[in-house]
Structures are given as C-alpha cells and as structure tokens.
Length: 278
Image 1 (cartoon, rainbow, N blue to C red):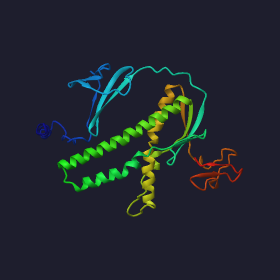
Image 2: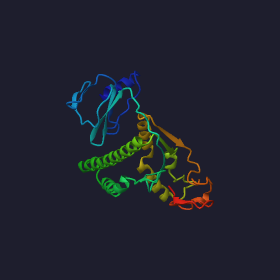
Image 3: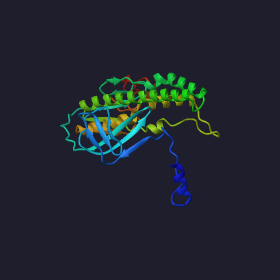
Image 4: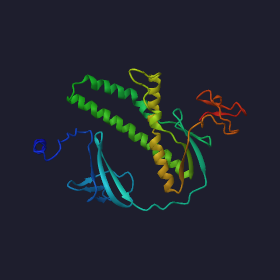
C-alpha cells in the first residue's frame, strides 16, 4: 500500500503520503449507513457489520453520524443525533458559583463541593510507570505492557473526572434555573511560567503545581455540561467578569485588595464583614 502511494507521488499525481502512527489517531467517522439495534445493544457500521456495544444511555432522535475512536485499549462509539428538545418550565431559583482548587466550587448559598483530585492521587503511580517505561527497551514486549498500563490509568482518571462533572452539573441544573459563574480563562490561568532562556520565569515549580491542580478540576468541561443541561431545562448559564470579584464586599460593596489578605479568609475593612474567601 505504501509503495503504491509513493509511486503515485513520483508520477506527480498526488502529494507525498503522510504516515499515520498506530494508536495515535485511531478514529473513523461514519456519516451515513449506520443502523442501531438498542434491544440487542448492537450497531451496524458500513463495511464492518454488526458490532456489540455497551449502552450508557438511551439513543434519542435520528442518527446523523457516528465516530468510532480508540482511547487506550478500548474503543468508544459516539453517536450524534438530531431531535427536538422540549424545555420544561424553569424554576425561579438563582445561584452563584465560585470555582476553586481547595474546594471544587462554593455556592452563594454557603454549600460547597469537595474536589475529586484524582490525577493528584494517581500521580505517584503514574510517575512510577513512566520511570519504568524509560528504563525498558523501546519496542520490547515489556515496554508495550507498561504502555498499556499507563493508557489504562489515564483512561480511568479521565472517566472518573467526567463522571464527577456530570453528576455535579446535573444536580445544579435540576435545582436552579439561573447560574452565575466567573468567566475564567482556563488556558491563561494554566499557562506555563517557565519563560525563556533570556528571561526565565519565577516560582516555576509552584506555578506548575498550581497549573496541574487547575487542569485536574476540569472547569472548562464543567461549564460546557452545565450550560447545555440548563438550556434543556429552560435555564441559563451567565458568565460574569471575574475582575475584583474576590475583593468586593457582598454587604457594603467596598472594593479593596485589603479585604482579602489570605486565600482562606475574607474580611472587609469597611463594614467588618467576615466569611470564607470563596
């Protein structure tokens, strides 16, 4: 196959072929010709035939396209459908949410949700496997075994985080119609502080640890889930400019950097209001 493609290139009939490394981008999209048998939990893919799958939810609407992709050692099937959403009557409850690292989120009602921090819990195990892989001969049977273990661990972390985000966002969307969140720029917040060789950054180790904690929370995915779940129920997610939100007193409205001298406590220098900083 490869020699045939290169010969076409040398005859100037096509561009030079690109080699796709195995296991790096293993996915295929089926835009049509897909059939589904939910009772038997089977899906028919063109040129492949009927394949069994484990259903995570009911398939609603007409199938538009299907993407089959590899994550680690397993294959996932993503089915995109089209259907009309009938929004239920929204309730009148409103709530504000403050995202954090020590607490995944703190609500204006005073309730809070503890973070999962699964990547942090599995970091030592992951580092051990990476060191083991570095010592093994590249391409050997043992190195392939270690790679599979690393892939399984990454998949476990990602699936557990997604499950946590889905459950948390569903609970909020069911109980509130309007949710206010800070318009956080996660990519900017988690940018590297390493700098360049000419102008190296400061506190690089501390900043890298903070970046890892921020990305471990999955804020961006949480906002996406919360947004579409609120819309399905007739609600709305409103993003607020985060400027000075941690320095503004909720009682008297005074804005001052002195109101929050620490990450844990908020103490207004104007009216004396004290509370948890989140």
